[in-house]
Length: 545
Image (cartoon, rainbow, N blue to C red):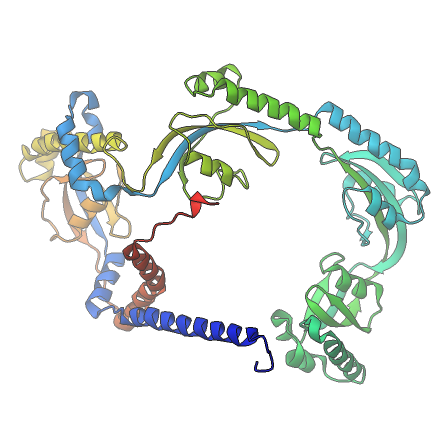
């Protein structure tokens, strides 16, 4: 470090030390919070019984749906009162609501003909060339694959044709997955249909490549001299998956390994030790065994993808741009979609830092537009991949709390439900304290529910009712409840019996450990979010990119 006269090395080291110090302080802080979280024996006991305690229940319910919505009036004053009381429930991030249409770009008939013309033009040259790999590299949309294939592994439409043809035979052009192709028998070889091999993997460091290759060569020499492969694999290999098995990779078919490894195994002979380099590092390979020899082909492919031309893109862009221009004010956006038989799509909650909209990759530009446009504005035609998109901004919500207007429908439903509950409670109260009498007075029957618990707060007739179940799990058996306002209606219920659940002897240690782990696993995430909120950070990244 001191030999660097520029001082840059020392500066880098100081920055590195500072980063380590800050990271350790931060981790100590998180650990203090994590280790400070404690679950008492009483909490562990409560949790156990909440999960396992079940009840058999008799109940009578009057559903909110029995009262027609139109008969319940809701005033603005009532909405405002509920809004003021519950506003903090409706905290929101900044978001935008858009509708949009897409104009997909597909190859035209002219584009198909152009691809067909190109592939036809190459057919005779492909037949004549003696350097298939070079020809493919210069003329194909896909690279040359030197792998060999056994019978039954080629596409069905060419497998039997190619395996009965001589070297140099060209089949095609033919169409496969929207690609015109030529297939040529480039070479024939007798190769094993599978190989069993072991390897020792040395991690590659370009700066030390010569030393690593020398180590690999020494290991190979030792193996050929009789050294134990499994011991050397455990000592040297960086492939954690195979080193514990003595380097054994088992049996594999052609194409299952990276090309360099594959070629060494299938072109070598049983018993060979060989060294190859791949993207993973340096391999010392032992070919333990090989399957039966089979005639295999190397197929060279020349393909031309059927893709939209610039002229096709321009035609679709003109259509999309024309739609955007015609609907610039947005008032006839819906009508134009219907008239032109387009499909409208919606994204009701686009957040300010979103990287894309729906399935459209790299559509950040549309997100930024949604947070700068005026309500009702229609966008220009954006290009994302093989589609053009025109959008209309319907609404934008600011960070903070939803306004009363934004959640008016939801509040109306809640006020109406509360008013319905009051009417239903009044009805149920007239039946007295006996379930059968209450049911009779209201033209209902007494229903039953078994295995009701905190873990499964469900009534068969009406679904999830956590508040009602929560109440019942804390009363004495036989006691009839007052009318309880649930999610779908009002209930009067009675616990017939609680299942006999015994506390296990090891409850304290096991349950405390499990609950503590759950809390501790969340601690760093929750602490970070709390700190971020307290810091009052304003995220303005969306303004710049």
